[in-house]
Image (cartoon, rainbow, N blue to C red; front, top):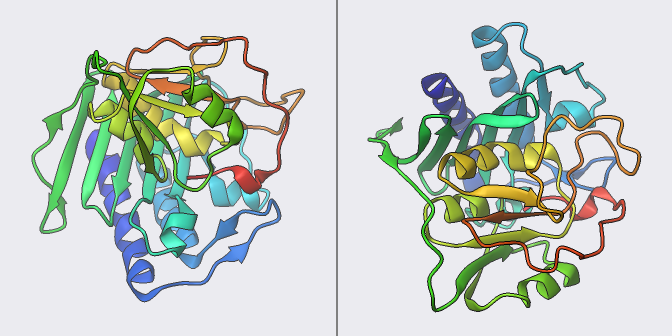
Length: 277
């Protein structure tokens, strides 16, 4: 699993990077979010690779869903975001990632996150979490990663660069914070998983493909991703009364800090315009 997902992520990243270097224009999808030819090229590679390596396992992929192709899912399926952080990508910033996750019974049990502009990979499964750099286009030695104990001086909190909300800022205000860092895409989870940050609250719109792979990495590194009522974030959410299929509620990714103020208001359905990064 690890070797195959890594190879697919690297292939997708190789398709993305020429568009990043040369610059690319974005189109607007029906939900208001941006998409580029790089998103589509990367997703095509990943879908073909998963079909060949894991025949019969359904794949829920962001651009395919946007085009109306939504497979039936049961207990086991893949979630794919071929290019998370499209706004970062379009702006020429390197905080964008390729994300592939395997879901079993609502839990992300394996996930790869690849940041091609940063030449770094993160992987997590039931055996633990690790990161690796790239050497000659291949993943270098994998090194274990783990969350850190929260420093007594205060937490390092990480937040979205492009999608900070007033609710997120109010939530952060409940904690003793020593540093507030802004990062794009699913790299926010990975910063917590590597012990460089302690808390990532997301009181704003996300979809399951935005979070699943990095959630797998963080859980494998000893952290957790919780909804505001303290329950683990679940995947494969269909037929939701208050939102579309695969939409996430607000959540907090944490190295161990409790959720303060669990009586925060529940999110209301929002447009997809405030979804990623």
